[in-house]
Length: 113
Length: 113
Image (cartoon, rainbow over all chains, first blue to last red):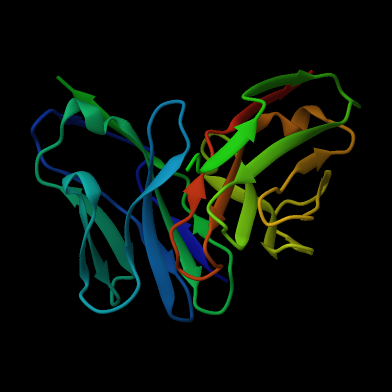
């Protein structure tokens, strides 16, 4: 069965510092991987997705993620965060064979001034 | 385009009451889904639909009904509300059930007393 684990429930970081939000997945089949962001009191929106090809995926707002098949990871990174990046970030996976997205529990990014 | 709209934004129910959460999209998307979001649990799929007239159960369908009579609308019905259904509900749509971006509504915050 598929599962997605986000290893940190909260990540505090100073403004302009780099950040990495960790995501590990488990699946016995090929998967597609996604990162979504949820700003306070809003719905979710797509940051980036990995379907195939290059393992480094660039998304909106300066975020990028690297697909690592051997480590079954899809960590999200940003070289310099801003106060506007304060949000909850969700990693999700989807097997090639079905429609359902499997979601991680989310990581709250807390930016310290 | 309005995207995905949900009504109401907030709702308080008493145990045993029934109600319908409305969801509509104007992007001609085939795939629509309902999630509930609870703290520390990510998003859990309640029901989904791959087109008008076709619905299926997700991970947590008990206590909820859906129908899809048109491409645009996908209402979620709570048959007899219970305190365990207190949650934030999100509707999402995508062009197809594949690895396409899911577009989320703003959510409905439901409290069952």
